[in-house]
Length: 214
Image 1 (spheres, rainbow, N blue to C red):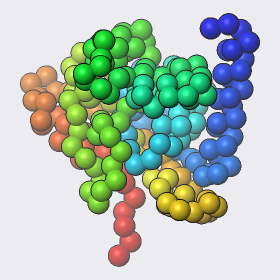
Image 2: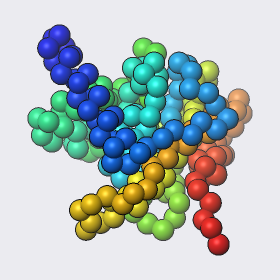
Image 3: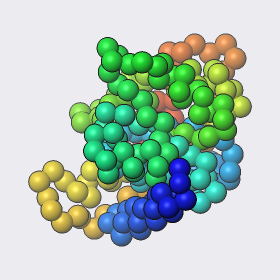
């Protein structure tokens, strides 16, 4: 990347962070883990296209510089502006979600990013959850990452209130605080099966959701 484009990406990133804080007053809640520059995979619930920018924006600068979101190439390469944001601002690991059109293994790209020392933001449900259940079933990718890199922290990350801030059909955001809660890290057990680990990871993530007042 040329220096002018790097400067433009840095300015755009700063603008995204300021916009996120202005619109949602987004804040981080670190529970059971400290915001230190250690390699991690932040795995989060997914209900909005804004989930990834919210997580990215609340990370301290030292963490944000080493953290790359895993994101859908068909979304982030759709327009020149999205391509600039995805590839150069967020430095996303862009994955083709179309099995019939893939020319490379998505998991190989993810593992290569971990091999180079990057931290990642992922959404193990795969798609946005638009239903009544707190979480959709997890895909196997999180387990595969934990097996390949057992020393990397797998951090449950819950994004709360984002859908409530901008309900469908509304123009003016509601004055709610978006909270990103980071839980205690997980690791795949030596003899732990894929299904057992994914169930444990899903439960750890769901446990961070705000409690509904009765």
